[in-house]
Length: 96
Image 1 (cartoon, rainbow, N blue to C red):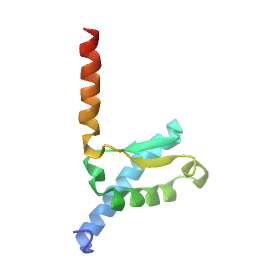
Image 2 (cartoon, rainbow, N blue to C red):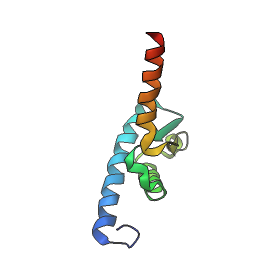
Image 3 (cartoon, rainbow, N blue to C red):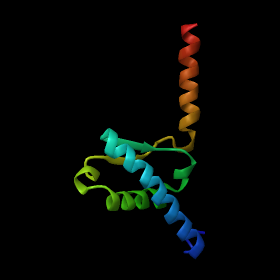
């Protein structure tokens, strides 16, 4: 795996984080958000992936733009979608 510095794993993690950074670049450059929160299963290994995503972003967008946008991990990680769906369900049921 990644922690054992398996060459193929390290290379694939690099490709994946570069791809995520490319998508985030579009959002940052077009929307100019203060914060981007990343969630889901991708960040089950946030201690490894988040710094790599930020590293790639710093290389592909102007530093002045990069410094204005904070990239964070969702506090509910992979459960964020379930909590969001539950929240929407509870609010819709109350309105009926």
